Length: 410
Ligand SMILES: *[C@@H]1O[C@H](CO)[C@@H](O)[C@H](O)[C@H]1NC(C)=O
Ligand SMILES: *[C@@H]1O[C@H](CO)[C@@H](O)[C@H](O)[C@H]1NC(C)=O
Ligand SMILES: *[C@@H]1O[C@H](CO)[C@@H](O)[C@H](O)[C@H]1NC(C)=O
Ligand SMILES: *[C@@H]1O[C@H](CO)[C@@H](O)[C@H](O)[C@H]1NC(C)=O
Image (cartoon, rainbow, N blue to C red; front, side, top):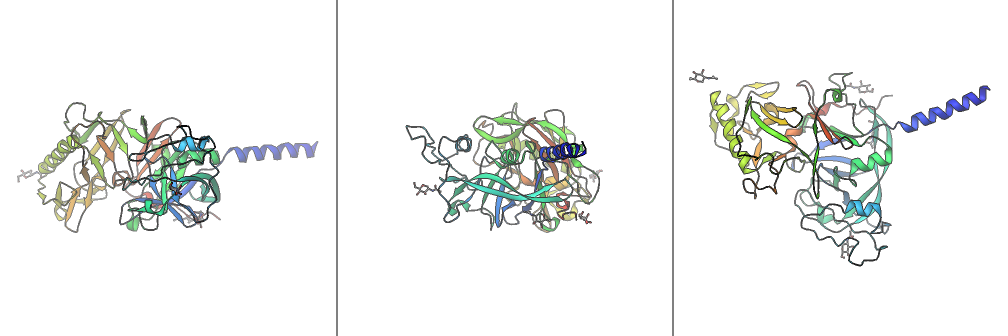
């Protein structure tokens, strides 16, 4: 009797531990020169984080084995779902033999260049986490595209490729299926410099930081629906209005619904289409005037700059009018000076929003708003791919995304 009971107990213990995998953690580093973010992928490889990218890709290793992926495999199909701008995609069709090797088209999110590549089996080496510390090392089976070294142009020094976080062949979906963790991921992007590395957690929260032990910030998330566009893997949200302090900015009718708002780590600062940028900058400038702040000569690419020595500095950054994005679901993404103003030199601070280039006012092919890295930093962002919602929470002033404890507990 007793041995049998032991057996049953042991079996249920195994079942318990194997059905509950821990999420997978990596540090996120901000590159000083490019303002892009990178994560370690496997020994010595670091990849640029691209929230809107559909693939994981890195440069081909010399002597890698011929890819075993036929062009009618599921991985090949998933890797080719989205059209790549400026890249022709012959795919599997046009009478090609079904056992033909898969060709994929990795894309450089900065230059927009793409090239042909092949799929290879790889491993994502990282640590699991309980949301407080790393727990144990894992080696996650993954599929990545391998590309020519030329495709690395303009990426941070030392980067060997790109980790796309959007779509069914991107990193979150792959970790979810290999590791049996939830189909969600959490990003806490760091400001960089002295603040240290932020975190990405595949499988989602909890998330605790050292400044406030015991507090799981994912309990404070507010939610807005994540939207998808046809032929585009990126994560869109619906911005209902933009407020400066508490007044909605007046835009031309439907300006904000035209093209929508997308989250994008490819750009350092939030880009606004000209029909949105103009009224927004005017409203912010007027609100600053009402505080008796006078602008100084602008420093490109920004259009509205101030004498930093005359602005009051607080724990929430410069004391400037708040910039708030009112999102679908009634939740508001609130930005204080820390998120809205950037120091461009010792004496000058500028409104950290940039006018979109090469698009016309109201052009529905361009998003109205591209939320860039600077504005996402020190927010906890949780992308839930199952429930199709974005959870967001602005960290309190006394902490930041650089305060995750990367030391394993003994
Ligand atoms: C890209 O295509 C060229 C020409 O067909 C081929 O020689 C090369 O091996 C391909 N590169 C990859 C990474 O598949
Ligand atoms: C896992 O965590 C340990 C302890 O912090 C660290 O030394 C190690 O480099 C981590 N492994 C990976 C792959 O990040
Ligand atoms: C701005 O300056 C005017 C005139 O000097 C003054 O009356 C007003 O109170 C000032 N406003 C603020 C917000 O400091
Ligand atoms: C980080 O975690 C380790 C292991 O639990 C602990 O010993 C250390 O005190 C923690 N560091 C901070 C700053 O909380």
